[in-house]
Image (cartoon, rainbow, N blue to C red):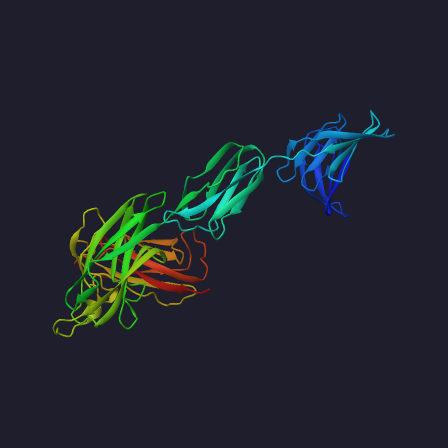
Length: 455
């Protein structure tokens, strides 16, 4: 080591190896914890002023380093010298607010005043378009100095002590898009305040607007649904709904749905809307309901919205099964609404030509059988299924069964079919224990059921 300086419990030492590094070491062990190459083979000694590291070489050149950025930033100004009898090499130390350097050529000790380095700051806020603060946004400063700070409970961030240089600040938080995406300073030569960023939640937004919040038995329940894609790419998903009954039970019980529409594709930055109308069963219980709508994939809900409504009666109706009469009479996610009739009852009340059964056994630990029945496309209003897919609880596809060879009977009647799953994915790798969803779709209908795999 050509020179040493102490920083608290550490020592900095200049080395003569490749790149002529300055190394930071623990005391007393001497274990290296940091280093940087300063590429000067003539460094003779070091000193630490409490903030920066100073070095002096055999030519008497004094160098100041920012030890966080490992960057040479300035020198010092000679203010006085003291005669001495020194005949050795250059030496450097820090004391009484000054650097002291010995010069063997003049036999003098020099007192060097530290020239304060002018520094600057960058600060601002991260908020959304409604001026609501966005906390924990990672604000990354890049350039010769690189560091990251996070916005606090008021959305505020700040970088301080920055020397004049080129910098870029980039905000980042999962699920958010910021405008501007970054701000550059070329160079930073003044304090920069109100460097603000506006964040937009990157998601697919679902909104419901009911036609009315009070409906009659035997009448209709209508609403308009809006789906806005704020993400950076086109998104495809399913739309499905259920209702919370006056007794607080959910009808139908998941994974069955009151109404399921699939699939919907919304390009980035666009909105799709549809008008949906249900028949209200003649025997619907009187009282308060909540209509619940979801978008996503089986086992992976992206977003949801709800509205409350009440059912009352104006006259008596024959007693009917309210759990089989919530039919959809208008639906559609195109820019122009599609009208028609689509059953939205659970699989127990679907036509017998399309049935997806609960797997057996369930739970299972080795093999399970999934049974279903289909009919010819000409005779079956629900079309023909070509595949049965299994998803994990995170919505990731793990297994696909090809059903194209499971044809219907020659007489056009439904044919009972089944597949057997051995708990392996499409790469024949065993899947972990947990909840899985299996999904069957025809041309105009789909059904999903849940199963549990236990090793």
